[in-house]
Image (cartoon, rainbow, N blue to C red; front, top):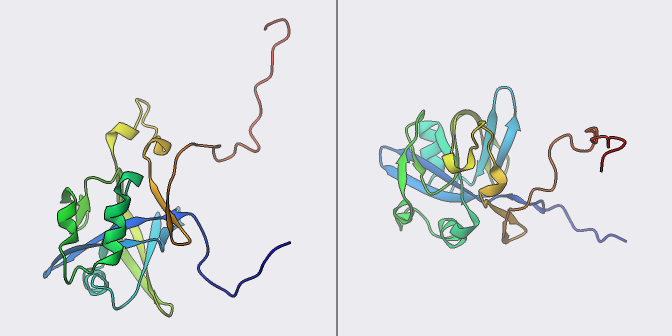
Length: 191
């Protein structure tokens, strides 16, 4: 038996991302779970932001933002970035930052994965505006990249958000296509 609720934002887990942006008045960071990938070719992402948020005008004006994916050990900092306004508190001072490679914006060096984004279009959806963006650069902590260039994201300890709670992503349980991969055959006569 299932219980039914009215339409709501129950989905998860989602990334608990730190979004950085900057305009001529300065830089800011805020927490967003309403972000993700929306296209492979060209690579595109989105972030949905309330117009009253301090960073909304910065992104609208400059057309750029970065999606910084934090580790679970950063939970309290991530939460604080969602609770405090950049109008009142320099949230970026909690992190080690560096300049983005392809956009005019700081990125958080403490985050193992960063997606640099250039806004392509905006959609006003009600409480939030969705900034749809091209991913123009991705940087990954070199400790997560093996000698063959494969990214071992399961080792990043990324933070996720679901229904008001934070979770640590961890153990890999399969890979894309695992349900249809051929299983190795056992050879006769060998044990």
